[in-house]
Image 1 (cartoon, rainbow, N blue to C red):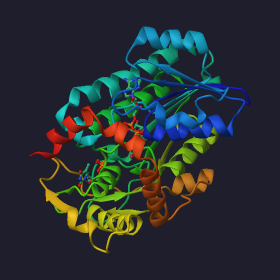
Image 2 (tube, rainbow, N blue to C red; image 1 turned 90 degrees about the vertical axis):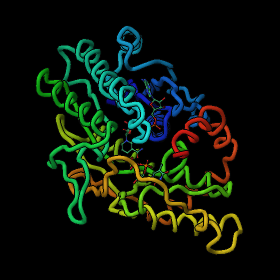
Image 3 (cartoon, rainbow, N blue to C red; image 1 turned 180 degrees about the vertical axis):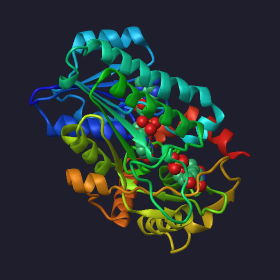
Image 4 (tube, helix red, strand yellow; image 1 turned 30 degrees about the vertical axis):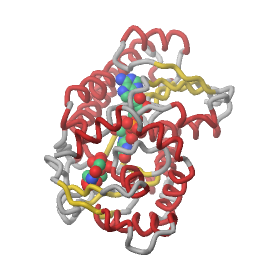
Length: 351
Ligand code: NAD
Ligand code: TYD
């Protein structure tokens, strides 16, 4: 479709802002509605460069609010939804699991339900794309990778809530015949990442000469993907995937947390003109996260073979670009780390 209207939820967040930017700039004939509640993680400064684009509109609202979502569908008559809005941080889910049930489960089902009613009789002309995580598959040992057929085995309240939302999306495909697509992606990194997650938190702390908190022994493994590669994968899947399909997205880029942090420290030493090894002295081992998944690794063969997607960047290059962005955008970092962030940090790392 050349002139469709798409509601992108969570477009003021980390990944959502990259997806919104990509769609607004790559598809001038589309109308992109960014629906976001602007929680602590949502930030309109993430979209400053495209906020005046004629095919872009921001609407503040809650995906759990049925009447509001209905009126949004009534006003904009969207052809599709790309759903990223979520509570996304595992540590916060351990402290406040119900927030995750509300947003990730109830919010997703609210959207699905409004879409089901609005698109009735024309499901073949409308798509509901649900953006999910590899964490639904649980934790790997030293061997193996998550495939699309891997059984769900979530451990954290975050991953349990995302698993539940995935199940509901499949239920709406199976039960009502809605056109639904899901992708499950590995850990993202890049610009505009809220500094509660490992990489931006560490960049911020290194910059300020504060301890870098490493949970447990730092041996947990994550598979890191540059966020713009994720946005490109979402673009391809949105346009090309068959209804009812699932795709894994990942970087083939596994790092233990401690190796990653050593690489980051070396880049930061160089960028900040510190002597080699100076930033690594900030590494501080702290109490492990409860239920900490040991290893995630994505097998993205299906996406590569069927739809021709592959990651574009080596990790070293992507990480350096990320550091450059944070160093060039001190205002952004200062803005998001003032106020409530300080309270969160105190609570999370004082134990
Ligand atoms: P984020 O926390 O940076 O952003 C989430 C956005 O959703 C924020 O803008 C927030 O304001 C908005 N939001 C939260 N609750 C809302 C509500 N009730 N109504 C409307 N908007 C609401 O998250 P992210 O890291 O960009 O993740 C986006 C999506 O991608 C999530 O669904 C997440 O599960 C998934 N995902 C994330 C990663 C990752 O590494 N960050 C990896 C794979 C999948
Ligand atoms: P995070 O960025 O929170 O992503 P996720 O838990 O969704 O994978 O954490 C990435 C890894 O880094 C994870 O193994 C937990 C670890 N970690 C730390 O060691 N210290 C920290 O302060 C944080 C936030 C994470």
